[in-house]
Amino acid sequence: MKYYLVIPHIKVQNANCISSPLTYGFPAITAFTGAVHALSRKLFPTFNMTLDGVAIAAHDCDIQRSRPNSYSDWSFIQSRHPIKKDGNSPSIIEEGYIHLKLSLVVEVTSETDWNSEEKQAFCDAVYQQMMQQRLAGGSILSIGNTRRQISLHNDPKGDPDKIKAIQIQLSPSFLLINRQDVLIDHTAKLQAENPDKTALDALIDLCAIHISPEVDELNDSADEVNGKGVRWVASSPKKGWLVPIPVGYKGIAPEFAIDRVADIRAPQYPTHFVESVYSIGEWRFVNSLPDFNHIFWRHHTDIDNQLFLVSQSGLSSNQESLQTLF
Image (cartoon, rainbow, N blue to C red):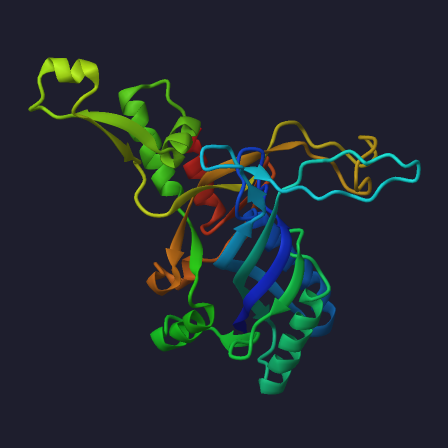
């Protein structure tokens, strides 16, 4: 039996906003899929179910950063740790924090059909466990409010009324949608003009704001030389609220067996050195869902190609997209 678990209005303090070596802002998608995976392992012995895909809906975010004036670069607000035993101040390691309010919709698969009492017991267990664990490295302060609580919905199976009931619990919010197709199309466009352009150039171009001059054709050449009649215009090739996102990892070396690498965090597991994989995402208002079944992020692993991804589509389509880009 398939259900959808709605965890509404989760308030998180000091989550990690450095999502990858190149991006910062909203936490990485793997932070939420990993938290749901940990939740699934905790609840499985009691309820005999699995949690799979997760949809991410953001209500509010507040990056802990500052700048002295509007022309300066942003910098993360750092915390000062207590003085060490010898009286010296500890070194400051730059950290990026963000305060969040978000909702999650999680796919639940159970072998049995739960009645209302069993559903409520499951929701209570989810609340208790969520309040004990971290989310994206941050502390969960509260879940839900007086009008919206954790709930378990039957599979809507395309029923608009049932889907709307889930949307109401998420409103108002923006859902993170995978738009790798935009990156592929923009890469092809840039390569048509310059074959040396890469997917990274396309990613940067989509995220950049271009400032270019426009000259009034009525002005004479003297005015053009003196800078008179020139209007500076900001433009961007992207359409919609597009953002760069890390979508997983790509292996850069063969997998090392257990106890082959010293001084690692979990020596009981094999070790794999990886680099981040990037794509384009779009924040879309919850009431304009493209397809309810295509908003869930899932883990996909391809050991042969050393790919460890999160995607809203199947692994085969991810492989085709990556081959197109790289």
